Structure formats: structure tokens, C-alpha cells
Length: 393
Image (tube, rainbow, N blue to C red; front, side):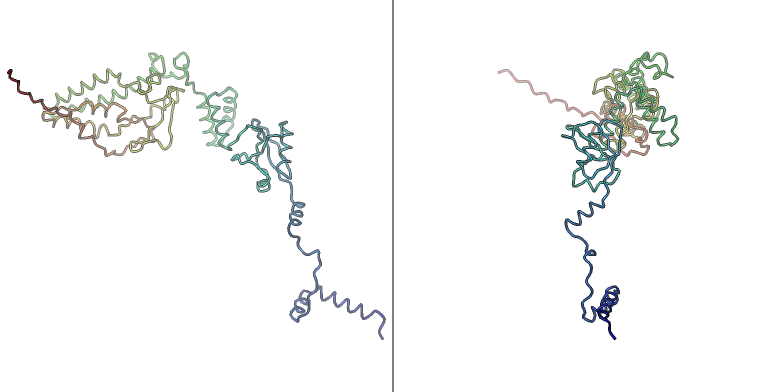
């Protein structure tokens, strides 16, 4: 016996059961029956609706923000670039008009298109109208500017950090910083910078005077080497060899043994340093420049003066292996020709063949360079032919 409505309820339950069973749905599709319809709430949104929904669930961006000439940073969050800019201007009390945000690391300006692509907690810089920022380059430039006019606060802070620092690398960096900012480059006399003269004889009253003497001593030692080689020269050539050495010696005395090379007070063309006393490594004998950019100012402090003594005046064409033996050979084989002592003088004692190099750029290997055979002897002048006298008519 059927009750009214009973068949309808059974049919409804059967349809619900079939719709909940995915295997049943697949079977129905295979049999050509229509699968159950999906509810509208499972259809993923598209287009502007998707963007709206993603914005709802997106968190605000967080940044660390500071102004250009301020070391203070504060955290800020926002949904857009203008919002962060306004919060930053309000915090630093800066005008919004003309202001902009950029990344600290490289100076890239922050715009709306770039806003959401920046990692959270990135450091931003707030720039007002007319201000610029090039990232780390600007920071390094500011650091370098400190060295030109170091103040007591910087030195004291670096000394405090160094006394507490344990990491070797940071210790070295801080020590180098203190070494640089403590230089008294402008001072010249013993009275102006007594520590610079520690360990030197009292006769040295100025920095330029001592460094000129230091250069002269190096050149004098080269002359002694040339002179001592006379014993190796054959007996028949010793007299001429000694005569040439005497000529070179007189020339060096007239040039004050080229001591001007180390004298910052000398004429620009006669010194190897700047007017402040900075020397730059000229690179190994087989290179045009120093790849490591070595530089030093021995006028700065005592430590720099001592370190400068390890720099070398390196002969490009080697003095002991090449130049001096070539001079002796030229004298022995002159055969009526006159030895061009000026050429050998330039190779032994002048910057034509001398390079000032840091100890790391001083290559001790054989240079394998020789003297120019065309310059060893002076050109022989041909005697002028005398014209026959004209007879009077």
C-alpha cells in the first residue's frame, strides 16, 4: 500500500545519494546520463573579481624607512606607495609634495607597479625635492668624505668599537680606519708632528727633508754598485770605465741625487707624489699600472713612513743583471767610439727606467729586457769635406 508522497521522497533521496557519490557521477557520464550540476559557490571567480578577492586576503607591505640625513629608522606598513609616503612624511615632518621613496640598496624609485614586488622589511629612503640617492655608492661616498675632515667623535667611537671587537676582520677594518683618520698629513715640521720623527736623528727637522734624504740614499747605493763593478772590467778598460762613473757622479751631485722624487715640495715634474705626499704604485715592471691600486702617504704618520721604506724603486731593465754589465761591455768594445753615458745614466738613476712599486708588485724574476743597442754609443759625426779655395779672377 502506497502512502501519498512516499514515492516522491524516495526518488528525492536517490538523486541526492547519486549526486554525493563521485563514482556514481562518473558512471552516469559513461552511460550518457547528465552529471549532477555543481553548486555556484564552487565556481572560481575570474577577472576583476579575482583581483578584488586577492586584495581582501593580502596583508599590507611592511618597510623600514628613514630620511636621507637621518640615522633613525621606523617601521611602516601600507597598502600602497602613496600611503607609505604620506606616513613617512608625517613621521619625519617633511612635505609630501615633491617627495618620493626609493630602495636603500640601489636607489630604485618605488612606484605603484613595483610596490607589491618589493620584499617585506626592505629598507626605504625618503627623499624630498632635489635630493638624490645612488644606493651603496652614496653611502661609501659619505664614508670617504669623513676621512677628509675626521672629527674627535668619529675617532673616539672607532676606538671604543675596536677595544670591544673580537672578530679579526672587523678589528682590521677598524684599525685601518683609525690609522687613516689619525694621519697628520698637513704637518711638515718636527714641532708640528713630533710622533712622526720618533726614531730619526735630530738633524731632520722636516718631513720633506727626511724623505728627500731617503731617496738620495737609494740613488747613492746604485752609484756604489756601478762603481764597485770597475774591478770586473778588464785592465785596459778600467780607466775609461772609472772616468764615465765620475762623470755620472758629477751629474748626480748636480741633480742632488734625484732626491726630489720623494719630496712633495718639489716641482710637479720632479716628484713621484702629489703635493700632499700621496704615492701610487706604478705596477710591476711588465705592466703599465698597478692592478691593486696600492697607495701610501709617508707624510701622514710614523707607521706610514716606516711602511714606505718597503716600497722599491725597481729598475725596468735590470741594473745588476743587464745595465751595469752592458756598460762595462760597451767600454771594453768601444773601438774608438764614444760610450753614450747619458743613456746609461738614465737607466741607472732616473725615472725613465725606475718604477716606484709596492713590495707585492716587486717581481724578483728575471725581466729578460736588454739595453737598446742603437743608444749605447754616441753617433759618430762625419768630418766635413773642405771646399777648395776659389781663385781670384
